[in-house]
Amino acid sequence: MKIELGFTGLAVLSAITFGSTMLSSSQPAHACDEEAYIGSICATAASYCPDGYFYADGRKVDIRQFNVLYAVIGQKYGGDGKTEFNLPNLSGRSVIGAGQAPGLSHISLGEMVGQETMTLTTFELPSHTHGAKFDPVTATNMLTIPAQPGNFSIDVKVGASTATGVDTTPSTTNNALSTVGGPGARIYGPGGGTDVALQGVSSTATGTPDLPKIEAQYDAVIGGAVTIGETGLGQAFDIRPPQLALIYCIAYDGTYPERP
Image 1: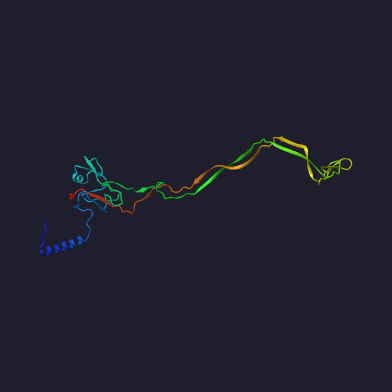
Image 2 (image 1 turned 60 degrees about the horizontal axis):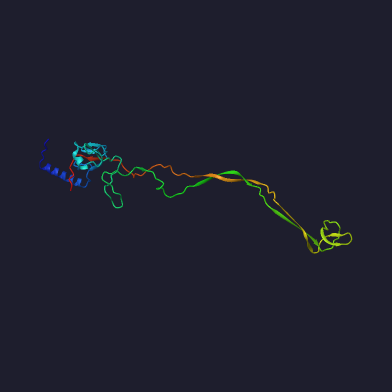
């Protein structure tokens, strides 16, 4: 169809074009452009990738059919490099810049890093303590002291009092050998004088005493168990930040990205 416009129509078209240009210059560029560089990645909120784009889902692509795209991205994302190559797989992944920023690890182009969840090991847990409970095991034991042999001696010394005796027979009150006094050889008296040890009168007893065996029962702790309270279930936890799922697309048709 051919459209012919007069001067007025051209003026109107120019005004519309100028207004559109002014409007578009203040708007951001579309992510998925029909004139995109081959191999570029874009995101869309639509449920499909536009014409000229593949889903960036790691699929295998024939090298002969898409040799320009293969020339751009090569075998960095998989494939045998002879008949097929893989596209970048951004399903369930976020994009990270390749290279190394100060204080960060180096990330190679095409390298997949990170994980959704993690489980802490004992080396990663903060220092902490657990309560402990001791349950003793007791038993009744028998303490036995065996009989012990031994030696003992007894020395007996006989003494006499210098007081005068008052009775010929000993009694509870006159039970000390005393100086003979009065008729009848009264040699027993109440004492009270000076005690004099008699020479040659002594006795020594020796032998082994009979120390019997002694046994006694007592309760003692013979063992037990220490129970330490358990903490945690060892389950993995999510380490992903809040995210929104979009579709990533990779351009296979468009402008070849010339090297600078």
